[in-house]
Figure 1 (cartoon, rainbow, N blue to C red):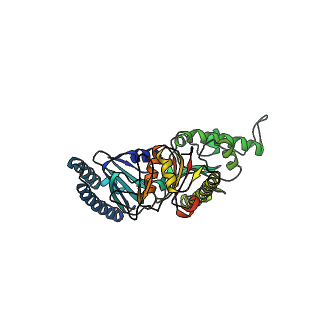
Figure 2: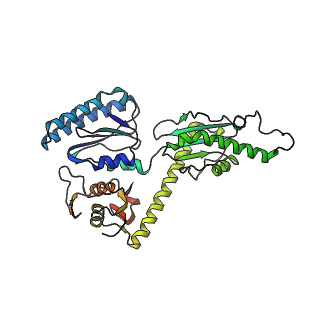
Length: 373
């Protein structure tokens, strides 16, 4: 069994691409306390029982049903797994595949059985990950914090990280006068601060190279400007938590960083919406579901925006992309939007899960296309 905290886009693409009878998708809210974990475990057990009945009704081979039962029971029995939960849990089982994701955003409960997995709820986590790294930088101290949605910020140990400016340059003081010919005064301090920042950059490089999370800087001038000028980290957030971070606790820095993330993502949504509106006007983006379904079927979708909460009953023809709308979801059907999503992922489209008020054109989805179909 493979446990993952946050799915990557590659994970979602891989799971969405699988298609055969007997795919079980389960979502349920969890929590970080033992009581919440116990309730979630009981809820998962009930979902597994319902999924087994649905598999039998669909005529799925007994060997595949037994595989689902075995892997499901393995999850239920794993005490270490249940000790460490987040806000929601996603479980995917088909008798061969068995994967779980502990998700930081709160999702409702669902148990879906069909010939493909139900992946749309995963996309909110990919669109707006509520985690970040915080670099609290001051002349006399530096600390790196890991921010997650539902746990206190965690201090990260970074090998080779200097303790302060003096440690970085091998001196006991950074304000004293130097021997003749040396840079002195405020100019000398800035040079030493640059050396300090460069030493921090070298120590951080292995950590940041393996992270896809935003990096939020907490620092006062001139260190803030020196760091931003020296760093080429692609996920360094433009907004800085201003002021001396030594005057803030880890929890206060985390609260400030969450505000930074909220504003960062609000700006991204606004820019995304504006870009789509321009493309709609130019005829290179679509808002009609029938048009989007056809484009997704032929691999023409470059990026897709979907309403995370909306389901549109119906099916899409595998060959032509023609949509047949329905009044209600049929057995094993996830609806038109979800099937558009699956086909867009298959062609490596960028996908964004937003709330209804943020969807360009005001519909259930919008798509920018690579070429007309």
